[in-house]
Length: 143
Image 1 (cartoon, rainbow, N blue to C red):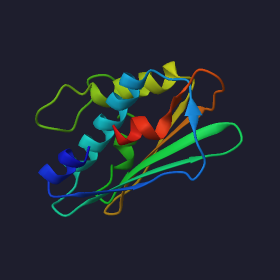
Image 2: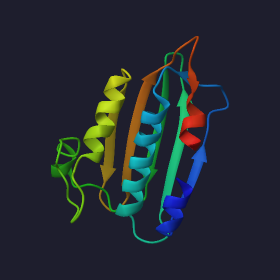
Image 3: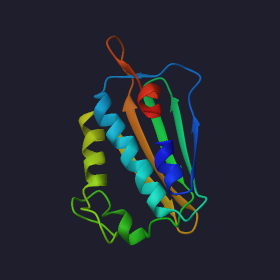
Image 4: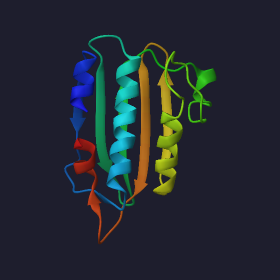
C-alpha cells in the first residue's frame, strides 16, 4: 500500500491497536478492500496528501478507518458511491466501492463514509470479532 501512496507523492500513517484483533475473514478479499480504499484516497488527493489507517476494537467489533485529507466527496454523491458503475473519474468502471461494500457485507460488517469538502473523507469499516480459527486483522492491513 505504501508503494501506491509513494507513487502519488503521499504518505500513509498506520495506527494499530495495542490489543490483538481477530476476525473471521477471507484474507485476500480484505487485502483487496484495503488496497482499493487506499488507491482511491491517493487518486483523490493533491500531492503531499496523507492517508491514515487506524485499527481498533471494542468488546464485540474490530473497526478500521481509512481517512484522507483530500477534497472530500460532495453530499449529493455520497449516497451513490457504493452503487455499481457509479464513478466521477474519467477512467474506471465504477465498481471498486461497490465491490468493497459487498466484501464488508459478506463478512457481516458495516461500511460507513463521512466526508467534508476540502477536509477529506473517512471510510469506517466494522466487523464482528471472532474466536477460534481466525486471521489477525493487522496482518491483512499491513498487506
